[in-house]
Image (cartoon, rainbow, N blue to C red; front, side, top):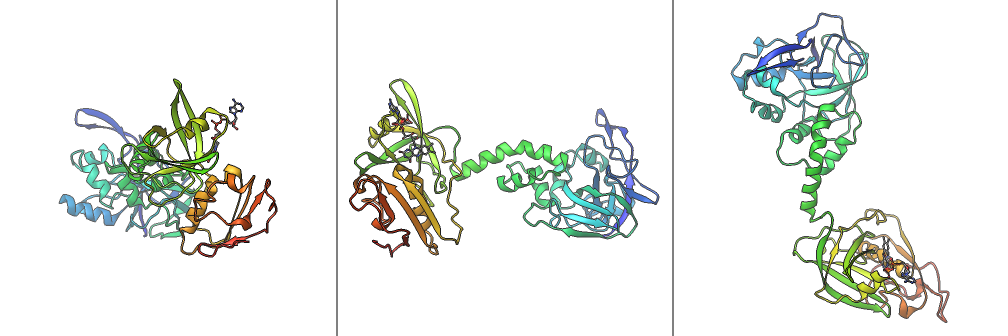
Length: 412
Ligand SMILES: Cc1cc2nc3c(=O)[nH]c(=O)nc-3n(C[C@H](O)[C@H](O)[C@H](O)COP(=O)(O)OP(=O)(O)OC[C@H]3O[C@@H](n4cnc5c(N)ncnc54)[C@H](O)[C@@H]3O)c2cc1C
């Protein structure tokens, strides 16, 4: 990628259809010496686009000449409204945030993809629909930001000095800008968190974020607000502790919760609405229901939950919370819980033992008595005696720490 020309232009009023519009699109090659300043090319004016430097390539001139049946050599440098004309630019390879040196002094970073406007269609004598074909072509050009100003010369090489392959490419951004379907959420969020993203790109992409979030929610079966669920199973875990399983009333998909997350359950109770947070006490990669495990207390929420029977309906919020297990870790897992506080850790144990390569796990658990502890009787992942500390038991303090793995659980 070598620099061929530098162009700049003032603001002009032009007639497009029935309207007179002001444009900074008309640029002409500048005599040397060429300078790139913090504010772009000296003497260059922008009408709408806030981006300081637009770069285009002669390779793109050739492509558009062929597409539009025009001899590309008839178009002078700057014709596409660019400030810097290069010989080539690979838009699929340039990642947003990549940093380049140009010549000896100038440092540029990739700020975004060209968002084509009506003036481009006008300049090329094309209908407005041309903008879409232009954006999808991979020959639409690149917005650069200026990191270090300085002098540039004909033939200067654009040399990459920092590359972030995790960022979307300029071609990806062109697609995000032009496609009618919302962009994938995760790369969109990465783009929007890049502080130096092109102002034009940011404006257009921010407007797509909500649609992208909704699309992602739909895809994962995630929902906002409240969703009706039916009680599908009730299990008495211990005298005052019950597990209740909830299945979606609409029969739709359930998103996989991260082990450790909780849901809010909403009931109607004596004419009022009650809401309580309960941790999910089981984990599955493809959940068909959500399970909570609740100790009956004196408040209305836990009392009401204990009164639920299969077939009753409640409303649930989507799983949430940041107290979650890192399932990719290769370090030993140490979990510490007491009483009913074991519930999120129970989901973590399920998730941990679903791994073939699970590293050793340790659970330190404090409870009042064995018969009042949840999961002891019902769960294959519940740790054996060696790991529990019971305050109301003749076998109070037991050996510690205890290590256990699936299939080789110790009994202290
Ligand atoms: C993120 C999160 C996860 C949770 N996960 C679980 C879980 O997995 N399992 C679980 O059992 N709990 C869990 N809880 C606690 C749960 O939200 C409830 O607070 C708990 O179930 C008690 O509900 P409640 O309606 O009976 O009492 P609340 O109305 O919530 O009152 C809280 C406390 O006040 C006491 N209290 C209420 N009313 C009276 C009264 N009239 N007189 C004297 N005392 C009273 C209750 O006994 C209780 O100890 C979690 C809480 C959070 C925030």
